[in-house]
Length: 389
Image (cartoon, rainbow, N blue to C red; front, side, top):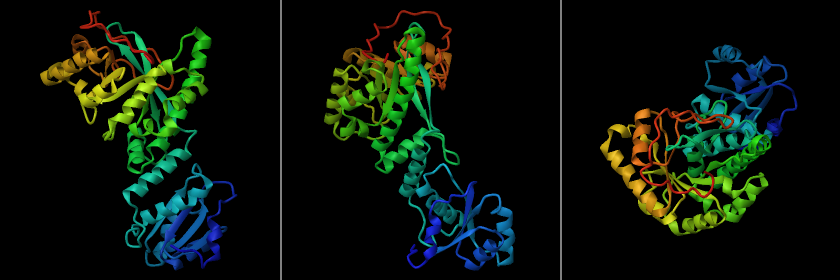
């Protein structure tokens, strides 16, 4: 769309008036001008693709827009709120795109959004809400004793009007080639929060906070996330590498394991823990785990669920227990929700666990729930977790 011929393009400059605004788009200029005549102070902008009207939310209502539309042969239009949480330079263009989509005419006028464009805009929105997002902490527990070992940091996006799942944000970042940007944003936010909590814990009882932080392989291989760079970020937050386990969340296959293998070795030399997530599912194969030699192997929740009544799942976990013992890795079962599954995992010799049965994520680290089971002799001596446990 072009605006070079129309001086009103300045109307997309940020408004200095107080209060929230709404934006309406239509291809029917007669409708927009008649509506604008009902709204003192409304701004109208003519574009090649249609006409835009911007006015305060309390006067540009759905009822008024429909009333005027009924007077001019019911034209197609879209009307949306302008999100003040977005950067000023972006909020009007974001609203324009949303209004065109709401009109139902986007594809007809060549403004249909590709999936990648939608995902990229969702990420822009996510980054703009920096101060709203939160971090939750879920306990990781020793299954032999019930003692707390560390917390997994779970980043919780807060995005009004959009899906709240961090998985959706991660997949959008991968699809648009922005996973490093996303991890940089999340890791800095998580470390800042952990640093605050660690300082408070040390002042109260001298106990350091130990946490696991998720990262994608793409970020672990980025020069900005070299082992030394990550250690610098950790120290800047007032933490030490010994307090941190970096968890490789693998939504993508690793085509060349060599560079990742070297990065893991460098991290381990600096006393970071390193975990491979979703073992037994997706790309977390025995071959990859053997190459990386992590300190922690996390068994996928789909394997954990119902394991008490599934011989095949039990056999797979037995294989991981034996495999972990050979390479010096600790086994951690994710998603434990039922006592029968917990009892089976203990009997199979799994070292650590997390899940709603053991403790739900919370805004501040909470003690794990009592397991309520008798003690057992572990099937093998648990491998030492060198850091973050």
